[in-house]
Image (cartoon, rainbow, N blue to C red; front, side, top):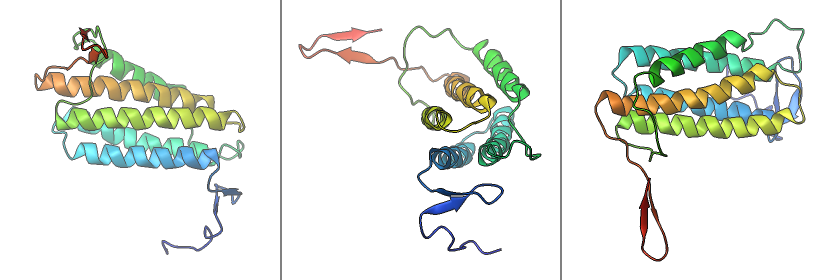
Length: 189
């Protein structure tokens, strides 16, 4: 199979089933963001030693391919294509609840960073949130599986608590922002 097909040279690409759409279609933007997120998870895995977390991140990578298949075939509801289901969302919620249960309750915003793994997990969270914003825009003009939006929303929450957990696991203290006013006064949360 050749990597290049030359069929996209005029600024169009194909969805499942052969439907041609412009490459600036918001659904293509969502697919690109999902691909970027999957790549960032791959980078993150290079810095994660915890086997349970590695397994969870690997599962998310596979689930993101289901999200992509769902998005690329949303215009063909009668086809038997893998779809994001409510169980995907429940699985994430269970993970969030389990992780949150061992974390110190959060009382303020935190500055992303700490361990390398936590920093990359914060970046995964940010990419997921951007993906969600584009997904919302795409859903105003296209019929999409509503479970995809819920899944992506929960996924950003999961990455956030995973980032906190990565720091907590290595006893790295979370940093709270310091708000500095123009008169030099600082406010700590």
